[in-house]
Image (cartoon, rainbow, N blue to C red):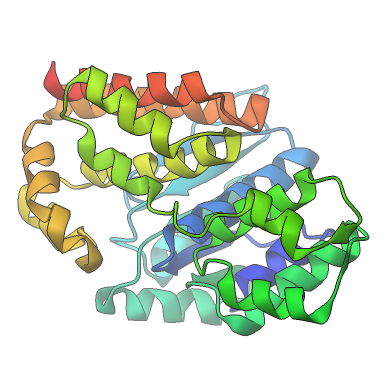
Length: 312
C-alpha cells in the first residue's frame, strides 16, 4: 500500500510492521530521513542489525544465533518481482528498498503498492500544505507561540527540501523562547546560505582551499549532518553503478553544471576504492547512530578521507 512519508514522520506511534518498504521519489534528503526513521523505530523494539544487499535474486540469509532479526537495505530494485519477494517473505526482519524515481521502476512501484505487507513511500520536495503540517506539529509539540504573519511567512520562505526545512525549525527551537518574533527569527535564519552540497564539488582541490570552503558553509552540527547526507548520496552513486554509462544516466539533471566533474570523479574509482568508500560510509553511519549529530571536525575529516581514497 502507499503511505505519505510525512505521516510516518508525524506519527509518534509509528512502528515498521510491514515486511517491505520501497522508498522512492526525487528528494534525497527526505528519502534518507524516512530510511533512518524506519531503521531507528524498528531497532528500538527489535534486536536487529543492518545489512546491505545488492540484489534479491541472489540473496542469502545468514542470520547468526545472536541476531534474531535484521534490517536489509537494498539500493538496487533490479530483479524485484512477485516471485522474488515471495522467496524472502519468511526471512526474519524487514527489507528496505531505495531507488530514485525513474520511468523504469513504475511496475516495481505498482507491485509494492498492491502488496498488503508492503509500503510504497514516494518522497518529493515539500509543498505548501506539507510544510504547514510540519510547522503545525512543531509549534504544538514544543508549545511555541507564533502570530499568523510569521507563521505564513515561514510557510512561504522555509526551504522545500526536507533537511533544510528541518534544520531551520531546529534553529528556531534552539532560541529557547516561547514567543517567536521576526526579530529573533532573523537572528538565526538565513535564506541565502543553502547549497551546502556544492562543497562536495570542491573535493579535488587543495586541502587548504577545501578547509576554507568547508568552514565558510558548514558552521554547526545540523550543517554537518546535511552535508554528510549529500556526500553519502554522491558516494553511494559511485558505489552502486557498475559502469560509467549506468552512472551517467543516474546523475540528476539539475547537476548539469557539475556533470563533467562527477564523471571524472567516477573514473578515479575501481573496485578496491569503492570498497574503501563503503567502509568509510559505514563508520560514519555508526557514528551518527551513536551521537545523533556529527561535530564540525568529524565532518571535515570525513570529507578529506573521501578525497584521500579518491586520489590514492
